[in-house]
Image (cartoon, rainbow, N blue to C red; front, side, top):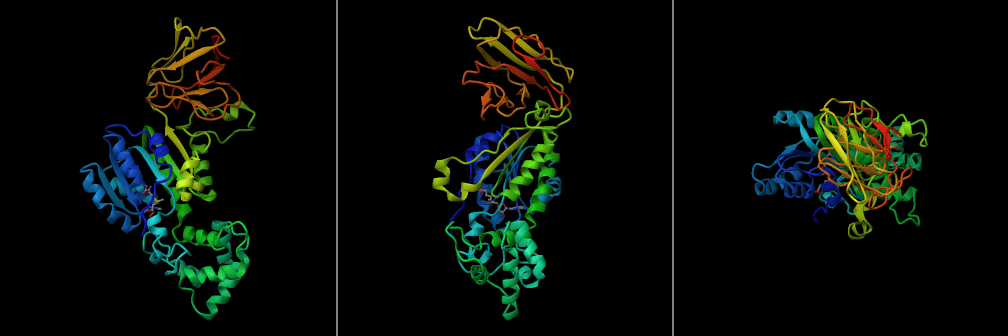
Length: 419
Ligand SMILES: C[S@@+](CC[C@H](N)C(=O)[O-])C[C@H]1O[C@@H](n2cnc3c(N)ncnc32)[C@H](O)[C@@H]1O
């Protein structure tokens, strides 16, 4: 059995940004790849959950390697609040979720996740409850077709369900090999190179483990556990997962009500939003990673951060190119106000942001320019639409400044005053 190669590991650590003294949760411990990287990147404490008892057992050696810093909890991540409260943890500085199954599970024929080797048709991550065999042998044909369509986006769901029901009348379907064979009888391999049973196996796995329900519960639970400035980072592997994550983050960051993508009001974070998006567009693995690890090919990483709840003093300092004129954008202690004595001339500008500034966004929403907690430098991480920001931030024309979750923010031109 092979090990699990963690997907988008560098990106995960960069988005989570663990800090010394922080308390984090890895909701999908798996082979412990993320856990190790997080623990190595800061003197932090990590709680890690996995519903698979094998993963927890395998993690014992890692627990010993990080005495007092890594704690494993067995159970579904949808129950993270209860699991953590039971351990006395009520707030977190960050949560990571790496959805789906691990290579340990996929590559072990006895777990029944894969049609590549024959094994019992099981697919239970937690090793309890109904198996995939129970479903294919007992669900009504229509229900089976719905599962394949809903969770596998399988267009031939009705034909496959009919073939399954016909085959199980001969003998119960007990193995991955037999199920794959039945599906291949309905859908011969096409030129895509994708095995015809891929979507049906995904559908059954999602249904057996209630994966989408788990994700919904986990996202809400994680958001409720995050302390101010805490981050939620999620890697998903197919569109059903990613859609849930994307929608949740859009809602949590108050971006749902965009009347039009051209209307800047719709792109501006709602005044009462508790989070801001760290990844306005999902991050994808590099070409080099997908070459080295084909499993990474479909990965999408999304992250958001809880805003600071204090109306604390934030500051961004802008200086002109020559560096001799500096004006501060000061957010006084009172939440909801930003003084804007920005007097620098239009034209080429450098922009420096002092540590502690929580949210600095460009007028068309924070699609590309943002300041992270503890960041001293502005980062440009996406293609800009409305503003042009070159590498040296010399073409910045307008800013939207937001101090905390209760502050609606204000637009300002760089020639002073509101834009
Ligand atoms: C993709 S692997 C994680 C790999 C891990 N990031 C690493 O670097 O080794 C996903 C893991 O999450 C676990 N898992 C999936 N859904 C879960 C859930 N609802 N609750 C708890 N664990 C879950 C699986 O059992 C599996 O071990």
